[in-house]
Length: 153
Figure (tube, rainbow, N blue to C red):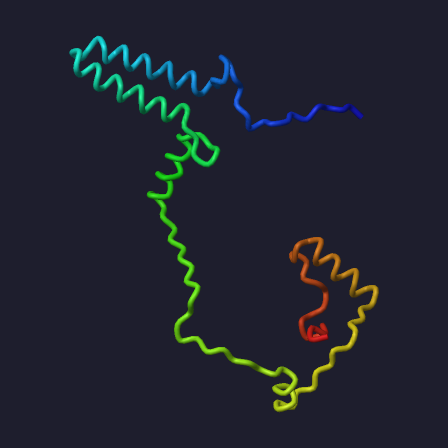
């Protein structure tokens, strides 16, 4: 049998220049292209204002990590949450709740129900049928009808 090496740390991005990853490098290159376009199209004050704004936003997107994940994943998760909010509120205190204690043995004796908690025994054919039901994930229903089966035992 051939042995293959399993890649380790596949979630770590490749670094191309020092600590800068490929994703960060591409984001900064796009930012510098946008800044160059701003330099050609805007006057000096507009270039300085929008250039610094573009540089800051691209730096945040490229280098900031929230909970150990890149910032653009954080933004995508916010957008996804805004589009499909799922409000789940946990209320520790329950109003109008009364604790009820029930003695099970006393309740069974009052009802007069006979409870037989003996060991369950199955024949070999029944075990084969049950294993077939489990193996087929319930698609095979069995040959016996529900009336023939001892379900309560």
